[in-house]
Length: 550
Image 1 (spheres, rainbow, N blue to C red):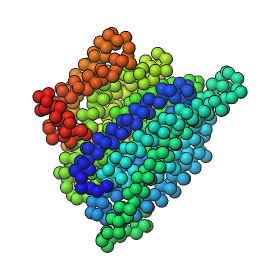
Image 2 (image 1 turned 180 degrees about the horizontal axis):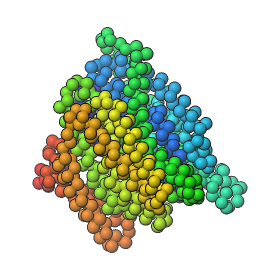
Image 3 (image 1 turned 90 degrees about the vertical axis):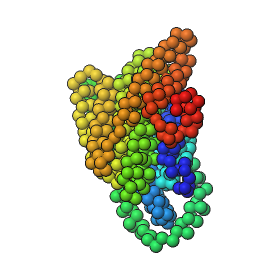
Image 4 (image 1 turned 180 degrees about the vertical axis):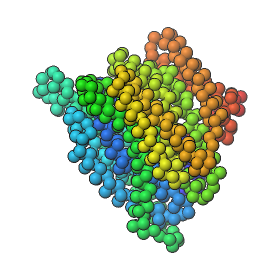
């Protein structure tokens, strides 16, 4: 876990490792969603998606941002070799999450009826123990991230998602089988099946987190002897008291939590508006609203995949920016920001164009059990959401940059402003127009756009940072447009030749990726050094030179 290796000093490489794990985890999450929907039905998935939204917000308020906050706290201590203080911070953070996690879990269990309709209450309660376990997992992940090592977090994420997938489907099937034994077919049977299935899926989320926690604790125990040796050799006389550390954790963690909570609260707000408030005000069928919201959840699930890279980059940026900022090296800080933004846009812009161009076949392949109308609707929603991929990627990254710079309150204020505007716009669209689910997609994009603008203004004010546009945005956009047309054309030709969308999609996507990077390098958007900094960059450089692109 030392800081001396070149790989660990390269936050782009570390972000790449975490991004690869994040994307793989989300793909696993996608692959199991289709059989899950087949087991629990659209209404059951709607119950699960609505309950998951409120579970997420309680998680955000209690534990979700713990890894980032802990890495920000511990990284500066490690930079000056204060190993004793770093380890004491680790223990204090564990105590903090044990208390907060238990309170949050009990709150979610006993107050579930405040947030969701009666049918979804047992589903939301099933999530309660997960809150407690996630806090401990978050501290362990943050501790290793502070050492600029993302490998442990990456493996734990993959393990978490695999366990989640297996238990979600198996648990849903088992609960439905046990709970509906002897119940005659009919409306009550379908309702019971939907609730039990959603509860089984929620159980899978908890088992996934528990699997990740067991893995990370095992990694810590393997490293504990080396960690304690460094603590014993620490000759620093300035040892912070536990009381001071608890205050430090509270002062740093609280703004992180508020920022992350408000930033992600938008999905919970629109869930409440669509499934609870608007049906009551407009006398709509609640079960139908949950079923429709399940279709929107399908689109959002696919939409979230490419954002994994930005999330990983944000996690890698916090300790890196915190250390550069603490040393007073503003120019180095700006260089890191520019590199991170450019790398994120090079991935996010083509991902957005690809989702727009191939929305329907992507939904069709990932959710084959859905009927044609649902596939078409989810695809159209995904096309509306596509632009938000770039906006969310940029705003997620800029949030973490501001936090790494120590301006932890700015993202809180900006997220509050964006959420207020989005909530008002969502209510007006749902209440007074017939745009229905498209209104949710439109205001989701609006929210991300507002966050981007406010965060960029803040960065310019804080460190006088001015974003480079040509190579970060313009050239990747041009290459992405060529890629989108090429991939769409290749897909159409392959469908005509094979008569199978499943066979046609993968080679069309692969062809699009090749076209994108050829055009990108032809436009000189990436230098050789920049390409080397990307994950597997040396391999990419060799390929590019063989093809005469460098």
